[in-house]
Image 1 (spheres, rainbow, N blue to C red):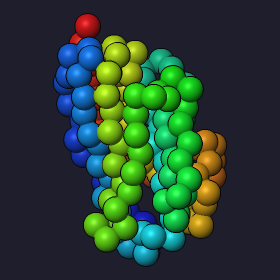
Image 2 (cartoon, rainbow, N blue to C red; image 1 turned 135 degrees about the vertical axis):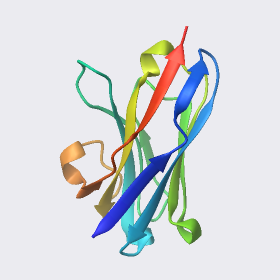
Image 3 (tube, rainbow, N blue to C red; image 1 turned 60 degrees about the horizontal axis):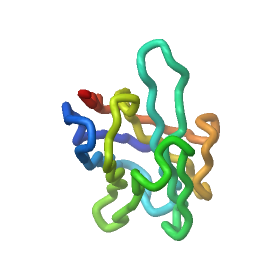
Image 4 (tube, rainbow, N blue to C red; image 1 turned 90 degrees about the vertical axis):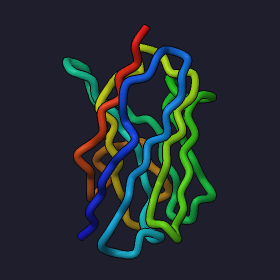
Length: 124
């Protein structure tokens, strides 16, 4: 079992930056690929970014490429999402997910564990 807790969300103006964190406890963090997803009210869930369990491979959703960066610190059991040049359309609940031995899939169904999320609101 893996427990995931997100933090770092908040209110930011368009063009600003935020860094989200996802802390994991339970099974060895280094054996899990980690992903970030988001969902806004009335909209479908959207893949944001993922990083392989080794950390050598990252993938991004088209809407965040060039603006967001995913990284991980296995010593701290934490994955990060650095979000720059934020836009109002980035407003959503962001949550992380864990996929054992994964390569960093963009498919939500690949992930066995999910956190509750942290809200990001970008004002125009």
